[in-house]
Length: 353
Image 1 (cartoon, helix red, strand yellow):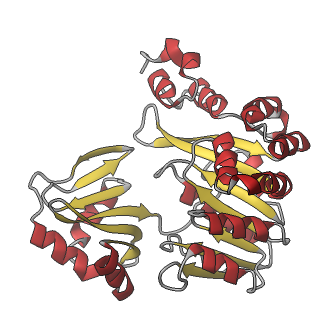
Image 2 (spheres, rainbow, N blue to C red):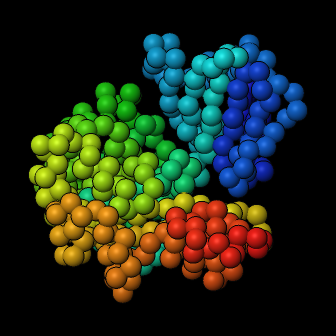
Image 3 (cartoon, one colour):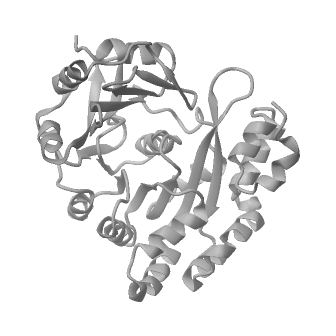
């Protein structure tokens, strides 16, 4: 049993999402979005170093020694998997462990809107999942992959850093590649994927211009591409995709996106009212002809208005999603105000728990 295992077991027992394991500080748990001490005593630098070196795979160790930071996946027997980031900091080494459920949940279990389920029925194009770190993007994408795995007969290829959910083969052939282990980079892996007869490519993160460019190209070749971005909101996501390119290329990119984009799903997790836990607020943009025209013309600031007008098609803004959670009694007025995009809409409710 590795030294870290007892801490990870405690995280799972307390329904935590993350373990912060830093030299010079007590170990901390993130539970329902908030950090709290797991133990009182600070961790000794040598203990942390030994515990982390003990579990780092060889290639991750090589990356850490070269760059002072690395990512990898760690399995706690057959109980659970964790996405791990190891770093150097002022007091020594540290690690952050993100718990990954042992198997993907379904879209129904996650209570995803019908519009998200319909996006999964696309056979080509680009679907973007966005939100800040810890907003549940990977969980939702895993559910979408599981839906495809059950419904279609094809080749699903995932490119991740590291591999999070391990998908069993159901109706599909599933190839899962890890950056730094099975491929040099996201961009090289996506480029290679074009020659591997995929029906679906999942890109764990659109980190750079080359990866974004190759993903858009793949989506125009009859492949369904699903990818994540660390952006807040559909409009900001489209803007980020376009602005990643030099000014002289942006007009062409807008044209490509206007035809290849299928939709943008943006989500954040909000503290649930009543029983401990969090619920997801989901913003959905569907690429209708009207939305396509706005993207092509560069009128990104009008996308929110298009979402408001497209409610019959399943589109909704983040504030509408938050209002629906509030109306159904799932979140408090205070939580709604804290997470709202336009806070003035919820101003009168911010004192209500």
